[in-house]
Length: 268
Image 1 (cartoon, rainbow, N blue to C red):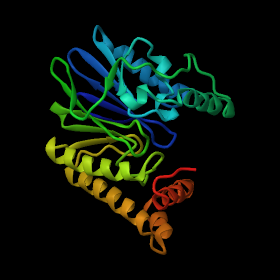
Image 2 (image 1 turned 135 degrees about the vertical axis):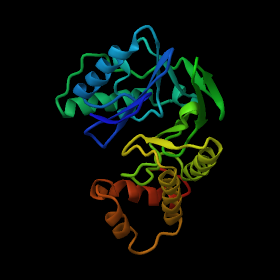
Image 3 (image 1 turned 180 degrees about the vertical axis):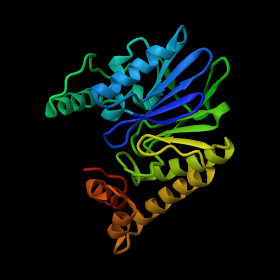
């Protein structure tokens, strides 16, 4: 399940949707981002945390409130939780929890921890908000578009961007909130890339890259895709089919994107 590892960071990748969980180690803290999906995968992550935690403080960052990203919150009840203000004020918390319950019921899954929507200890309210640890600085940026409550996290000393459900190499942009916000967030991602000299990108789904040129290309591809939604050309689906291995499983999301872009962000 370990997908990528260096001296300070371990990225796990689920069998479902190539969803990532990131663990970062520093002298006084363990930082865990979006633990997920299946019970055996969560157990592997939990066991890893328990082995390396020692007397350090455990921080838990949620990039957004989609149910697959909060599904293992209950496995880490003592963690200090960080998320955006929109995440903390989400009016659909019960719906997110019900989606987890429905998923587990559909696949006969049982878990050895409670299911709940995580309460937030540190609320990120604005771009550039920081958390200073002993040898590490985390800088946060609000990232709406995929969802209203998206959050980018920059690990300054490691020049790493934890992007949540953006900048994937296996998915085109999924717009579940706002087309205009998504476009603005990609502009923000490009500015962050240059300002923080990012050289490692961890997407919420897909492959970690440590190549700045590839990061720049992913930003460009997302922007081009968003532009294509505004003025869709014949054959766009064929192009996407050729580019994305799992497009057949994502075509409904693409068609919803087209509808959102055409109708000025209105979602049925």
